[in-house]
Length: 458
Image 1: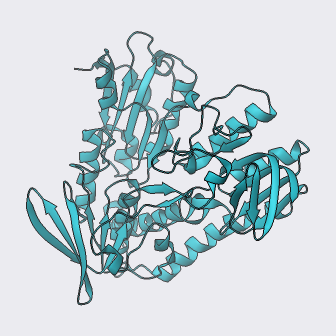
Image 2: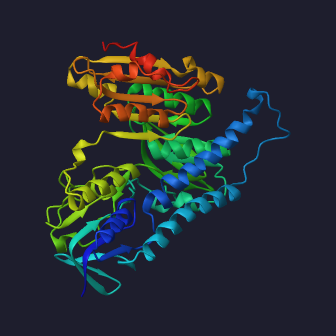
Image 3: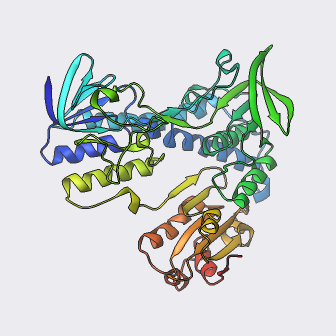
């Protein structure tokens, strides 16, 4: 058995960064990757999908050139092979960068293969058994496939396999109207596909406030996306060269026929083939590894970071997991998962930036609150760019004057939200922003104005 001070399983956002910190602290580290270095974000998540979003935005903007007084000769075309090549080049550079940095990291041994626990503090990979006093699990997640009758009989895409296509699906049917489904839906509609989005819940992105959901549905429909909510998929079958999706809605059965299907109905952790039982590591009913507020599992000396621990499903939460673990182990600081503020974005166009509580969550508390909203059509920067869809909404605690949450759906909402997030982490009263002088013309400049226009939440 090869002994190390630490073993890191997986090279997503948390693993490589922690390996570097441990090596810098003089520890002998083994890191294991079974497939692609960089994990979900680099290979099938943030990097490639936002690259596609950028290409789709370019196509959409060119088609709108006339709105800006710009004349384009002839119809706008999209070269899907070139789109894929650009995506592959950008994602590939990131993946190779992670791999090179680890393989040239002195004090770090890289093992390529599937890791599996074979006992307490023992992991096997490619027939080699490794041991360490500390083990860090960073194995990520994958698409969850629902038990829909007939689905296994037809070809379908997931967010991962969508990365491999270099053609335009004539009619893409997307099962799931949440973050992944909506981003892909708008992207491929802008590339030129017919797109149908089918969502089981009464509205899209059901975890968001209703006004946000309705606004997102409105601009997607305006772009020609067929949105079906409150619709249960009860069967899928081939019909000639088409794939027919049967839907039950309001007690009636109908069907949508398309050429390709994307399953975007959620994620599951990559924990079912790690041999966790052999090490006594506990998981919940969904397969997520149980961790405490410092990301420790029930087994002393073993931690779980990233998507596999159920404490966050984003690149930034995974990175923060690394920071928490490194701080507690190496810096002797007391950092906890419960200290972080909920924050994420939906990368439709316009994007949604979110922080803290939703309006619905604030209402459930039953406590008084203040609210301020502004339509993006009233934001000069958005008006000047002719990108006026959406609105911004901020909620405040009237007693301590701290911001409770915000939903910024509109131009640069994914960037502007950080003004809110930083103020929330500082636990500063909203009056700090109310009195701030922001730059004109920007979207951010309207945040101080919103703080001057707070009213009781009715």
